Amino acid sequence: MSSATTGTAGTTCRFPGCDRIVARATGPGRPPEYCEGRGHTKVTAWRERRRLAAADAGTATGAADTDNPVTMARVTGAELLRLLRAEADRVAGIADRLREAVATVTDPTAAEVEVEAVRAAAEQRAVAAEARAAAAEQRAAEEGQFRAEADAAAEEMAGHLATAQASTDR
Image (tube, rainbow, N blue to C red):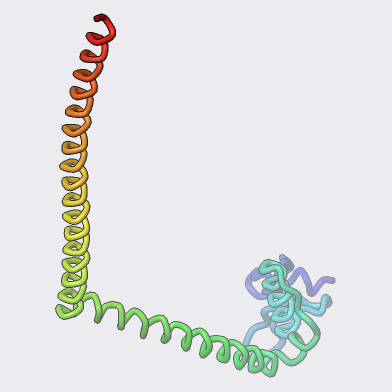
């Protein structure tokens, strides 16, 4: 326990969450970065950082992730690459459709086609409206004629009524 308190210039252990003083340097070379007696090493610190990162992300790490990290990273990388390729294909399809849409929007001939279609539809609506107006005028003229005939018939009936009343009065 005495070596835990005597360290290299008072630096603390690099193990996540450990605040003990690092072990004393015993020879030439790189100075120690971890405390003694608690199993804090570069490997255990790496595993602990991975475990903490997974816990923060809400994921679980298995023994394969910590015992074979390079192999697992390669497998994960291959899966992510496959997903990225699939996503790139999807995005390429969207880009093709967008390119076609932009080409259509900027094509003057396409605009002329649409203008012509709108003009033809407007002409059809105008012709139909004119036909309805002509039919309405025809009906109005017929109605005026029928009204005149009805008025004449009513006057004739009124005359007959007056004659009939006069005959009845005599």
